[in-house]
Image 1: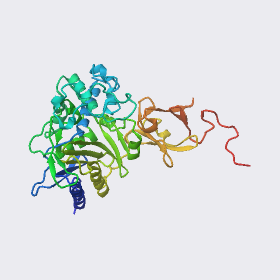
Image 2: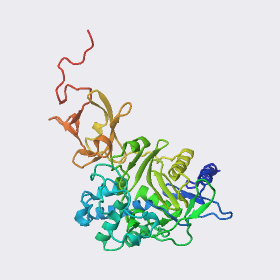
Image 3: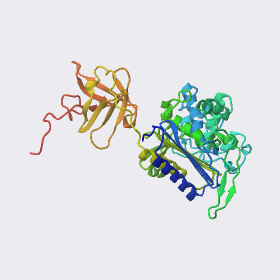
Image 4: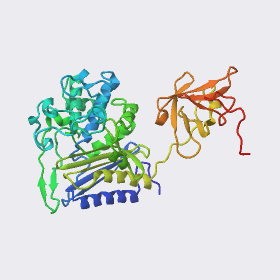
Amino acid sequence: MTTSQEELLAGTRRSLLHRIAVAQAEGRAPSLVAAVVRGGETVWHGARSSVDGHGPDENVQYRIGSITKTFTAVLVMRLRDEGALDLGDPLEKHLPGTGAGEATIAELLAHTGGLAAESPGPWWERTPGVLRPELGDVLGEQPLVHPVGRRFHYSNPGFTLLGALVEELRGAPWEEVLRREVLEPLGLHRTRGRPQAPHAGGWAVHPWADVMLPEPSEDLGRMAPAGQLWSTTGDLARFAAFLAKGDDSVLSAESLLEMRTPAAPPEAPDVAAGYAYGLGMEIRRQDERLLVGHSGSLPGFLACLAMSVEDDVAAVVLANCTSGPPLVTVAGDLVRIVAEAEPRIPEPWRPMGEVETGVLELAGQWYWGTYGFALRLTADGLVSLEPLTGKGRRSRFKANGDGTWTGLEGYYAGELLRAVRRPDGTVSHLDLGSFVFTRQPYDEEASVPGGVDPDGWRGIG
């Protein structure tokens, strides 16, 4: 019997169902829905409910809380890519008079703008947004609680400012811009600021008794860009596929990679927990697997979107309870189940096209002092430099078209790699950000800083 590339094996599907069934039962969630994406396609939906005969499907809306922040970040990155702003711009340049204008747009996206975590006044998630009609009502008299740019401090008002920035530069309400520029192009027709039937009701489950209390569902007003959206597993699965691969009609793969890259200095507990934050996206390590996405919560609802780009698998989990199942862990487990049971089949190896003159001779073994490295040319036109043994500094480099390459990641990100040639055209050494790489350890024929002892290598005698 053969199985299509899209279809999950029966054993995998049962493991996924078992995981969400345990989460719903042990977490005492009124309902829990989930979806898995592989290769850009939704390959599994599952649901568990406390109501007999009722299983919410992929079209039932739930509040998604702070996953909304990733949508807002996409809008900001679109403005950056259009040249309407620079991530290094202080907010004051585009949105003056907030009292928090010293923070840059990148710092607001990364929660390093120094702003308070919450809005002053009544609990904003359970009270109507009309209580906070202006930005000043959201920020309060003292918006900053930390020096700007010094530490990661999660801030809901920070994303309110980013939503206001979008409105200022687009000349339209945040939700209207979001619908026009992201939701409609991606086909996310069930994602909206207010619920549209069918949708789940939000519940608080008593911590010491199996009874429930309905939670209020408020329009968050100015705080909407931080957590207003309602969505479905079907829509969020499509959004996850977009976050992994990009869509040039909305945002490029390169800009999404930038969003998924850590941008905030983590606190010590976050380092220990394997947590970091990019530009509107969370980065977590779970089971030795790197997961990116975002979690969310509002009274009555929990949400998580997590994806492993390396495995090309993503998961979405939604529940309608204020507290209960640990959805971050559940989503990570769904990714793990698929990635381990049905590991990604790599693309066939193919040789590269034409090789640039003089580049092939650079391939092979090089030494930085006594550290051995291998330089390889890959079919995607990049150059990789990695240690011969063990862990160490490694990076890929892209060609600049002038015989030099620029590092793409790690220690050498942004650094220039070039081949230094002798008068006769032969390669003397590689220069990488002033580091000299030679064909032999401390090659006496190369220009090694500090020189090489003329007596050469020796033993003890």
